[in-house]
Length: 81
Image 1 (cartoon, helix red, strand yellow):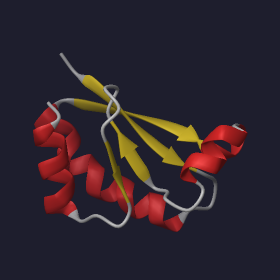
Image 2 (tube, one colour):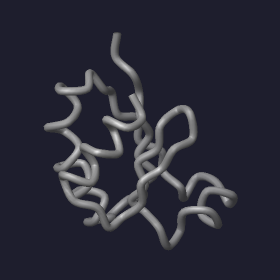
Image 3 (cartoon, one colour):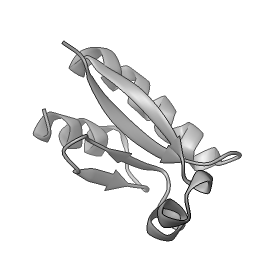
């Protein structure tokens, strides 16, 4: 059964594109789906994530904010299975 993780992002975010390129190799390994949430659609999200995006979050609330690399992302995802 696959799980969903959230990518907090916004239009034109080149760092978010880098985060997605790090995520996709992990998606199959951990059977993950990615749900992108544009923070621009919510004042609360802009306030919370405006200077931290990209942020990858589990549905349980664990988060990893940029900057992160592939080993850090793998460790985060493995620790939050």
